[in-house]
Image 1 (cartoon, rainbow, N blue to C red):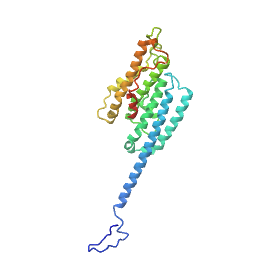
Image 2: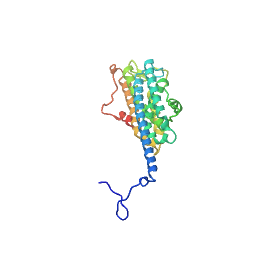
Image 3: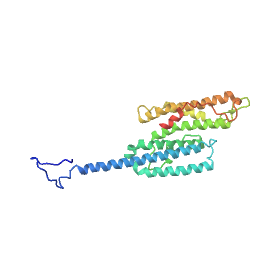
Length: 276
């Protein structure tokens, strides 16, 4: 039974239209509208971030079909990448108005996953074409001007790049019998012999990245917390390439054609990097 308003003497109190209107109602209605806008904006950003992540992964899968460093991307693969990058650009533009001003930091965690995955794809393509890391400035140019690329997302995207370089190196050694970059190939007696002009190979680049990552002083910052989760995975990826190269050089021709370096199936540490 609904409550009844009564006067001080216990009699039923007449309810007028003016008594129903509280001076606080307009204020709380504004709060409600602001919260509704916040949740709608947040959901839009999360959905766009997930779509960007999915498309970036497809770009990476396409790039893993490339077999040469410092060469142009094959036309068919380049076409696939261009179409997906255009879709990603449209997704960024669709949420750009929601990421202006203070909202760029308010929703940074919601968009961060998609940006990091896209940076991984961008840096992987850049490395395959030039065997160099993409700079922060060049990476920002791959995104719309209205969407900022933070230094944290850029660095964390490079952490994830190590895992893709590991996969690329292992696959290349299994199919071509050589380490990408031309440093080592199998000689007649199973020993490593130079196949290039003495330039860097992918293992040298991975070791250099490991050294620079380990030298970073991140302290208790947000970057430090996220990078700490990926540091061990990054080291494991480099070690797997080292072990594969050692096996290729030492065992040499004892390995049958199509041999895949030994990576334990129960070791899921590499996959864990995708979850952070």
